[in-house]
Length: 276
Length: 245
Image (tube, rainbow over all chains, first blue to last red; front, side, top):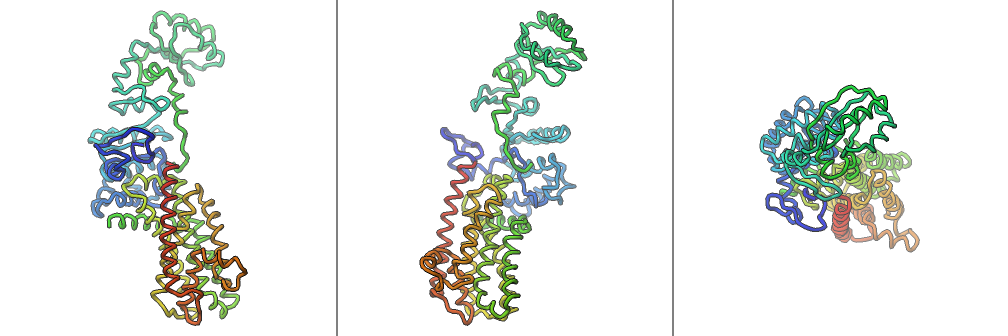
């Protein structure tokens, strides 16, 4: 809606004072969008894709070549400039898609799920590029379901649940709203089904989050619950690898403020099909 | 002017990116060539009679194939969204897509025409009308391909849908049989299709052939077809974008 692809059913959205529905072409000149799927042209090389993007934005010939080469350098794609887009790895495709969105030096960049589907190193590299662009003064509007990413990259965060903004603030302020929560993280060798089922009925615990080997107990009074938790673990013959207390993260604050599990957020947005 | 330049960039990119796509090679390139060769090998002298029809058919298949691919394929991979995010209006996008398809069709038709005219030794007697008919028909057929493909999601659907009107047009528009020899009411249908005017016009540009309609009328009707199909395609394209994005 903000980038002019969908018409709003009501209300207005202004970007740099321009109405996105009334002046869509002007708005497109000042924004860049990186969609969830990397949708450049597979048959064109990395350089040709950037040059073409520059042509569509009306950048003069000499300037678009200089700008394209500069972006390829900045995004670590120089050695891949003559490769067709379809021959690049997923991480490189993502980088090139972001570079293409920056060809016309937009003031605002919309990034939709930038690291989805990337391996750890590609995702880390991409986050660094995003932070570098931010430092250069680019305003980035990032959409993500991966809350730790929002916490590490964003100055302000808006949490949307079922299409409505629940909270908008800095990550620090949002986290401070959950600071009365104490979190005990216990790493176990294995978590059995029986353990999982009985854990849900545990008294004195506000929330329990689990992944493969870790259990996070969210509580307002750690001193009171730690001994029953240990007893519970002993009763279930679970072997402890490590125990530590954690400060609430943005994800913890999200869970506390919305009453939702962050995993649940993933159902809010259907996956698109298309080229990765 | 700026918008025309951008339309040219879109057309150039489409030519560069898609001219080797399998559906385009099979339907837009090989099929017309095979038809021409089949008729030539069967009866080298008799082919003179159907040269205008073969040129028109080549133009129809090559222009519509390219148009059908560019829209349907880009919709599927999400690349059409990229065009919609650039500061371009729908007219520019449509013009760019039409130009790319028409130019591809014209190149293929030019090659086939050169083969037919030089090898079979048929001179063109109204050169400018001949070129004008081919250019107008190329635009009309490209727009027709775009009109068909905007409503579908997959390339094969676009090709299948295109064939629903392409094959009947071959038999109804005087490519192989004169419209005057068709039983009623088929001629009525023939005169509703643009290929009829392409073939009739081209026939009058070659010596020894008479057309059913005056040459200038064919030209005017082809211009009217270009305008009509352009507005239809524009309106359907706009509506599909509104629905799909």
